[in-house]
Length: 189
Image 1 (cartoon, rainbow, N blue to C red):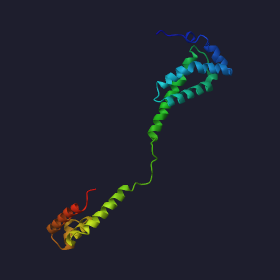
Image 2: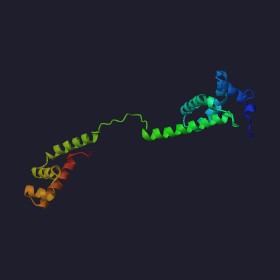
Image 3: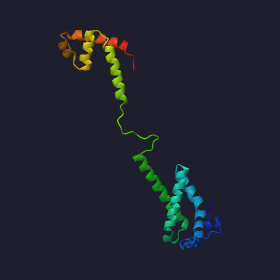
């Protein structure tokens, strides 16, 4: 399609006259600018942003910038529409940058994070230890003592053997039998 002049698309829209009237405070001229440019600006913004809500918000910001800076615009060979779309481009870029910074800093979630430490694992461990202690209490005395010294006190096989007055091999055998018996007594978690 060949490039079409603005006055061919909207013959009643004399861009320079309307802009100059809006710069003088004519609200109807401002309304004409909005009506004329809104659909194209919105399509431009919507094609660059992911959601309709974002496109609507940014388009609103664009027209606020146009109104704020309208008095500073002067015709210097470029159409007013080019100025409007420069503002639109800048607002889209600013929105995308802000969004990236926000998403990197604090992503939104469906739940509020609890800064308190999570004691769930500790509770599970304590419950499991209680089950093991109850089962160990049912072991024969020699096996129970080996389990208590090896895993409760953290002694080595040699240290456990010295404490109990047994050989290291005897401690290993008692430990093996105790663990095998505990595995049958304690259900897997």
